[in-house]
Length: 374
Image (cartoon, rainbow, N blue to C red):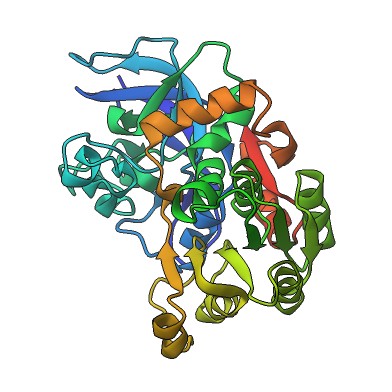
């Protein structure tokens, strides 16, 4: 029997999140219904509201970074029980496609349907509905902005019963994306000089990842003083408000050559940001582009000659090039051991009804990460 829930939906784009009553279907085979504990307020969900990321069906229930407790398990679904704690991966992993089979599950073929709103196998099949029966699309197939949600087991990672989901929920997107952008995609090495451009929920974890990988110098760039201070409190060796100053600092550590790695995690990334990062790295330096903006924007104003003659590398990073089923438990273990900071990332907690204020605070630069507590 479907259960009643409340969730934050977008009815059109551009638009704002509106909290409405929802009906959440029973799980079918290979699915779970989860009572949410906490959800991060990620900029990607704001891209849905602005229309930078078009979706396949409206109304659309947002949220893709969260954790909760299994309320019911679909028939003939092994590996999960009622009462299990789970963290969602916003990228599902089927375990069978070429990308999963070769250790690149962040690129699983199911990811092509993240914004469709429906079940992976059927574009007419939905698990959330309005009270009148109208279907509601699910962000990344999970919609963590709902008190209850029904998800495929492809998107759920079981974690120990004592996991503090109000903090560990961040492992489902921001932490793994930022940390992996430095460690996996950027391949930061001991002694490197690294620039992180944009210190939000992703960038702060790129700082953590670069430090964990052994970088000697980590230069945080953000126009907001609070974010620069937070970056330094989590280990950044320098913080500045513009890329020209960051480039000069990096050159000072590298005999004028530039940073080894520059990671772009700006909330609304455009070609100009990428160009600034490209100009900041040395020969054979790496630029990692993790941020998103208008998905229709085309073109990067970078000198092709430097790409060729200096052998600079330009790489995209989706979920930090991670394998969620392996890396989320690994990062949770790092948190327990004190090697990864999570508590310090949460600036403000909000009720679901305050989601609009949460995004206003994000735009105002007040939060590293806002979290909805259910």
